Image (cartoon, rainbow, N blue to C red):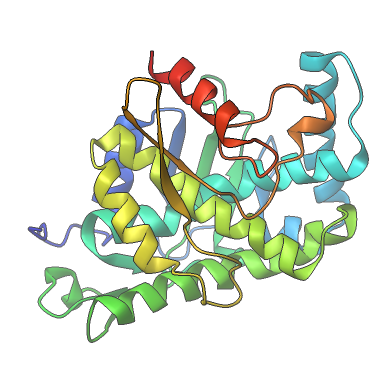
Length: 284
């Protein structure tokens, strides 16, 4: 895989490609010493991790959205699950996309990320980040940039991905945890799903879905604490013998509490026959 020349930021080009194929999410990088945005729809990851009034306001958005879209109130733990998913899915992409595209792994403590999901025209919102160093492989032109940490090989870089995601998500999970009926292992199962399904989706848009599956199977082989389970991809067979790709989630998104008949194709509650039906409906 050719490595591009080092740009002003080691991850700027990766984020530009992400927005190019997925315009519903925008990522901006703060300059050195620049404050991250807050207020007016913005919330810092640190504020979500604190689990106080900022998290209350964040989850009030989910509660109102469920009532508006489904005509019923969701349980508080379900609202918290939805809110965590809507933050963690794009937040994981901050780390996994630069790794997948350019073999560069940025570090983002919770003090280095702000999120605004209320921006008009952006279905997943916008993220503002302040890089805190990054890992890369020998020979990468970005190794000459400030904050670079060169690691020995691909497996060492995968360890950096796992560590960077855990560093960011661990305090966020702690902030959301008391609002949910999930603790430790169940929360990390959800984190595992966010890592896998976010990159899997973006790689499909990039036309690199098969490579993403291979990379994610190496990233999460099933014994990488604190993550729970493996990437868990597998193949089903359609009625005409066609291969249908799916995976087994480590957690449930809780949508069944609103629409019991409408689970997703990777839900642990969905049997293989129903998965085939759902997958055919999305590819037909």
